[in-house]
Image (tube, rainbow, N blue to C red):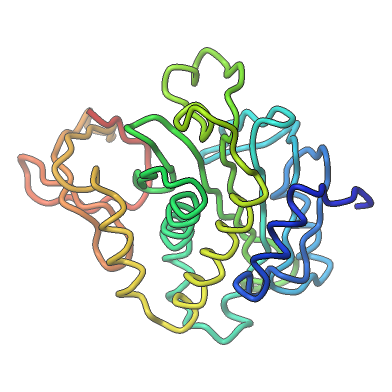
Length: 268
């Protein structure tokens, strides 16, 4: 990785200084890459320390949850993946189960700090503005050998308007489209990494209540929203009633309270 970190990113990261925590020393930039998650996973397998971060201007094979592609054109977004080692760092093992929720809180807080936009979380791993998707998060296990070696946490933020594919155009948005002005990508990168450093410290220290409380405040659709999903017995419907302490979505149906830990939901 020989690409030089652009000046617009360097200045903001330098200004953030110690707030970046473990991400301050290991930020690597690539102008164009297949997937920042794949690049970070390779670094993790080679022994890269916790906090190593890969930042790209473009992904040619970016992906989201459930194997979907993530539209990542050059200059339109921020594509970031970080190497985390929650067990090796001494944090409680249950922290791993709340990592995606922690990242959602951090991303929402970072975007709010950088832009003032009321970014909200949609369970389990999207950032939205008025139901339009602004950013996504993908956590994947990485490393070789037995047991959990590392987790690569990736996130992509739509910064500038782009010619989105037809299947996402109607439900996607960007920071600049919402603000009606240019956005400092360096500031967005610095604030999201600083927020992630702060919330990851909460996670590894076992301050789960602080994370869950913040998540619930930042995810209004997790309470009182009608959703439906497919089961082997057909379509199920219900109204969201928040999340439990393990991050599962709670949905009230005609049959009672359902606990959803994965799967595809249609939000009404």
